[in-house]
Every structure is written in C-alpha cells, then in structure tokens.
Length: 265
Image (cartoon, rainbow, N blue to C red; front, side, top):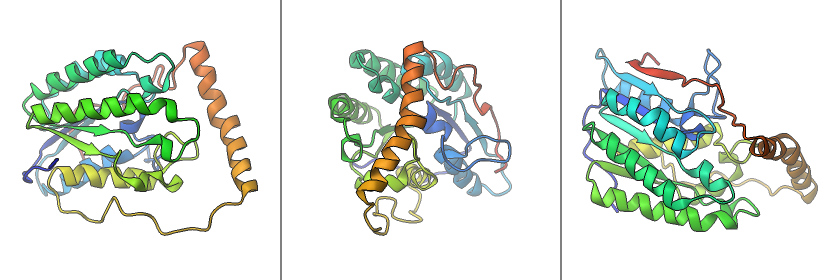
C-alpha cells in the first residue's frame, strides 16, 4: 500500500493518543515534559515554514484507553481543525485481559471519522509486533493483527487517512529502540517513528528509519536475568498494581500542549 502523499506545507498539527504520542521515555524538555516523536514531527514541519506561523497541540496523556481518548481528546482536536492530525490508541486496551476488540475498533473508527471531518490529513499507526521481542506476548497478537487490518481498511476507504506501518519494520525488534520498561520507545525509537511519519507525509527521508542498528555482542545469560529481575521489580510490578487498583499513570495529568498555539521549538 502506498501511504505517502505529495508534500505540501502544513501549518497546523494536532496529536492525540496515549503515552506513545505524549513521548514517554524520550529525552526530557526544559520544562520536564518528554519530547517524543510528535514534537520531532512538529519541529520538522515548522522548519519548512521559516518566518511563518506553525501551530501545534499535543493532547495525548499516558495511560489512556481508547474510550478515554475518544471522550476527552477527539472533540477538542476536531474543533482545532488541524491540517495534520495523528491518532494512536487502543494498545493499552489490548494489554488488558478481556479486551473488547470490537469496541476498540468502533471507537477508533469513530475517532478517525470525527477527525477527518475537520478537513485535514489523519495519520494512524499499526503496532509493532511484541512477539518478536517480549516473551509471553503471544496472547496479544490476534488483537494486534485485527487492529492492523482494521486501520489499513480505514486507509483504503479514506484517501486523507494514512497509515504508518510499524508492525512490518523488524528494526523495532531491537531492545535499543525501547526504554528499559519495554513498553515505551527510547529516544532512538522516537526518532525513527518521527521519520516514518514524515516519510508518509511525503518528506524526503533524512535516513532509513527501517534500517537495523549496528550489531552488538549478545548479552550473557546472567545479564539477561539481572535485566529481567530489574524490569519485574521496577516496571511490571507497579503496572500490575495500578491495574489491580483501577489506577492509571495518567490520572490527574493534563496534556503537555492543550491548545493549538505557535510552535517555537
């Protein structure tokens, strides 16, 4: 599928979603927020308009389920009428046992329709394949494949809806593209997603975001065990604790860019 469009100037960008779009685990900005691939895309688009005003909003908040994204972000984003909107969500739902994948699809589709009604270009994503890097993730694959097919079907039905296919990029099997929590992208992962989005928008590739990283020596078994124990204690345990108590990492957190305002880098 050709997911690119002819490059034209984009003067406003609205990002909606969860931690993926908020930018979790990228480098920190001076104010304490994470940068993230969406900020990187905004910076690249703003650089195309020297002397002109480029506006950017990022409504994404970590931990949000697709129902929360739909209820809290989509109407606000649609009213902003960004020339570009990125929409990512649903993976937090898939991670939870008993996920209603039909409802996830319905909410994703409804969100996409509402954003397309604003007249701009909408970019969506397929998830990476967790089974190639995370043990015990095979149970997630049927839902991930179903969401992949659903999003690709939306793109076929809507010429202004583009899909960035991360599932088919083996570079995301490399642990160096992920934070130590194994759920969020590392700075290099964010850099590659930003490049993938810009490529879908018809921008010339600054580098091959699909290319594998340089090889490194494999870790010893002892090093892998230490890393697994560290992950269990600092990341998986607290995540399970939040699920059991009905809490989210995004509870009480406001978006980092709640208004569509000039972007100054």
